[in-house]
Image (cartoon, rainbow, N blue to C red; front, side):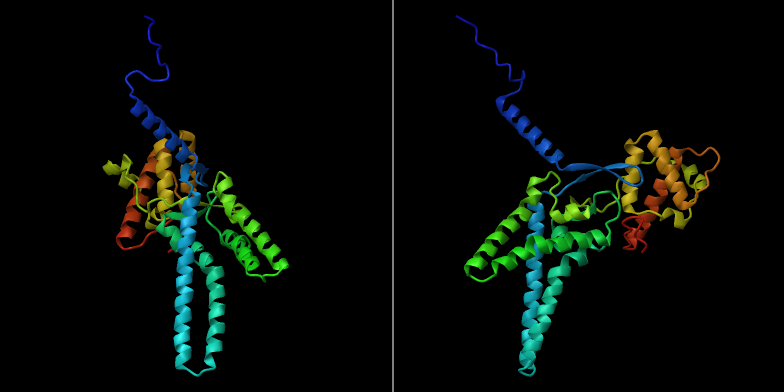
Length: 314
């Protein structure tokens, strides 16, 4: 009787069910890794950002569309009620006002919310998304305007083509509008960063919003009683940065090289006009400043003041 062939594809002690689960888990990890991007900030630290996928972006867009239509419909009913209560000729004036209002809601809804501190519309906030600059810097007004005015070309024009007359010329224009919208709407699916054409032009990403909370204190200087006396930062120095820089500084303390620590320490010293004290090392300075910055941010958050980053001057 010949011996049974050995199955070399299975690991010893690993059941078929466990092997399937392991392959599924590895496939999911690989899929999620494709959505993570490494970004080097102006402070010299590398951070990892998770991009929003196409379904999340589409969901946020549909929520925003629903909010926009709720606003304009409620305004229309309100103006109609007011017009009926006034003279009969006021209906045309109210409708003209509504058209102007609808124009502003349609074109400036996204700009109004994304140009703010959170860089996210209500739809994006609900799904935990926000707009960010791809170079790691602050999101500028020019980028917000560019990415949102392109939306009119992506979505607005196809609807205008579709609403044209029913003659032969109008049918061809409607078909052209359908193809046009298909190219732009499917663009995020066929590029690895899930960007719209507007994102490509404006230099932006849509990313998963990191939790707005302070990370665990990791400094050893915080537990040393002599650290506060050696590194006496003023209030202005301690609040020169915000939560974003605190997280970046934590990444620097956790996993960066001594060269990066030295570069970041030099930038912070120049930013806060700090004169090095005798025997001061870069690591000790960074740990002490991290503790002071964290303590100051926690004090401000107790009073409802959340400083997002160094550009937030509130």
